[in-house]
Image (cartoon, rainbow, N blue to C red; front, side, top):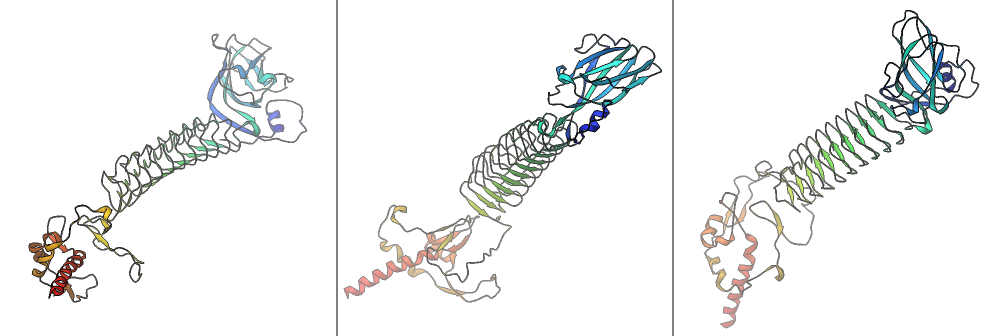
Length: 453
């Protein structure tokens, strides 16, 4: 874990220097690494291998030249020292190269058997350490971490777990908790990865937060992302400014400024940006469309491919939706109440609704029309219609007030083009907004007759 603090006085006494250091303490950061074998004198073929150490002999090991990747900024090493003597071993001492040999023992083996001990040793000249044995022995040096000054480390970073943040030597203020969390981070800063493989491939991305197994697991350079949940934003590599809450939310995303909350919300989106999906499987079929808003369980689930600029609230949408607003689900939502309309006078066009539930206004501009002709006798059948008074069997407010109008089934026999049909072909209503033009035509014809009298 980052932020193990050691004063230089304490560190020097640990390695066996027998002189007091009268200087102010300075903090070091501990950088853990997977255990790495630095030297083994039993193996004549390794870089720091045989022969065995003869009695009363000193040997220097240049740690920085080894295969464990220890940086030159390391001030001290964390070793596991093992001796395999051929017989009695009075003591073996490890200390910084270039310093006087301390009157201290790192390890003993009076019985002549293999013994291991941990040791923290300051880096000596050119980063090397010396080893001295009183009697013939093989020696094994395994290193499991090193200490660096704060200015040389991933400053103020915290890593907990095997493989968590092991290579981050420049990025600042990162937090990695979990196996392989932020495993390959290099310059990325201010990231938080909590969970196995969270942000595991991030290298340069900054200001990301990933909580959950493999959350933002494939991110490399994307920044300002937040992922909470197993595989949330998992395949995002360079996308920025995304927020994902829920299992596989925004799983395939590599775009910018998306928000997904709910299991599999926006899970198939790859390049679509500026989408907002709130709910289980919301916008889950979208791949490259942008600017969509979906609220509710499975909201916008059917909006596919490049569908863009849709608002789907409590509606699953259709595969061809683009620039569409859908609110509610037919057959489930049977009444609509919207505040701010009643008792709010305005001027403008009346709003109409077709049999599919789509809202719109009646357009009268010539630029929207074709085959324009005088009405002539087309209104003659008006005189055959039967005006009636009636009461609805069931009104929303239960009042059953008196109404005036026509019977749609009767109109269908005389003026079928004035009738509105439902989804299943049943007669539903009359287009009363068409009657004024028909009545005007009849009035004009009547006026002409009167003028001729």
